[in-house]
Length: 391
Ligand code: CMC
Image 1: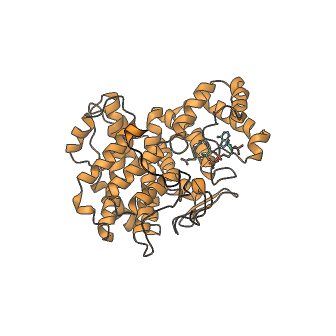
Image 2 (image 1 turned 180 degrees about the vertical axis):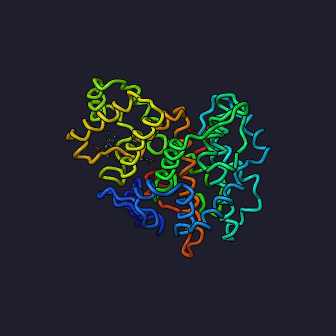
Image 3 (image 1 turned 90 degrees about the vertical axis):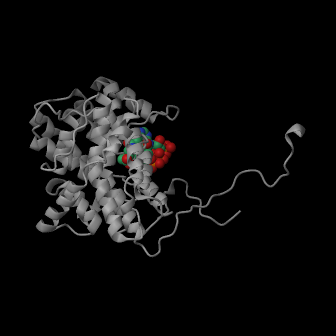
């Protein structure tokens, strides 16, 4: 019963109005507040993009300096949270830890949770953007058994994250500027992507007026799946499994086989029916990082050849399946030294900017209502209860 539009997977439902991010999937265009992603990735910084997403315009020099200071002031975690980490198994997936710790922040910041107050919303947003690198780095440190490192606010947002992840108390950590720039660029490329599954989750959770830290934990949970943010981890694992170019045709054949659930990870997108513009920048960044670190990785050659073969194959051409943002990111992240299990945690760190910007936009919308989809009921019609001894 009911006259609802049935749209599984929301392929044709606009759930909101938004002025943040524009995607033209046929043309491979991605704009944040009107600015092309390529320009932002090449010329801007993650902090600038965060400011842009939250405030609508790029910051002036003073505004950017003030924003950096504000974010810097919130980088530390409550000391009690170190105890919280110690409750996890050492082999816990960093996304499980991040989901738990981000949610636990809701128990710590009672002064920034009146979501009807724009100032408090902004404080919660700043806290989340500032604390995610600390949360992610601590998840890593905990997994390898090294001591947690406190943030060093003399460093950039991304430099600080690198140090908290790879530094040790016994030695001074020198941030490599090329690696810092590359990682900052990866963060920009992941900052927002309109109403993807995790962002929609954050909006839906937030639509009930829920605590913002808890809403972000919901976003992290959704991002973790291999069809979404988990694809960067899955893509690199797949490239390793393929191992050498001669094996590519076998995997392409598997991806095309209707009876085999295998998919090329890092390929295909709900919205892009053309090359994902983020993948273009990512591929270029691989070369820059390899040159700087004087390394090479056979999986990059596998990735390049896989892309070339897939893009010539009728199956991928007809279905318009192209490499997405996750196809090359893992190659860079592993060259920098991150284990595959951290890849999606880095995605979550960066996407926090989009999540909080979208959450703010939603709460400040006068038309905002609780998100409450309807359904097409397919269960039994009404029937009478039968006591258990009569069944
Ligand atoms: N390999 C092989 N076949 C594929 C692939 C792939 N990677 N992606 C889609 N297809 C096929 C699919 O089997 C289907 O074929 P048919 O019409 O014959 O049933 C057709 O293409 C359309 O796929 P769909 O699953 O109906 O499309 P969707 O819009 O629901 O899914 C997707 C989009 C991203 C989940 C999907 O392309 C996929 O699973 N890709 C691999 C995972 C991945 O890389 N995810 C990251 C996405 S980008 C970053 C992010 O969002 O986090």
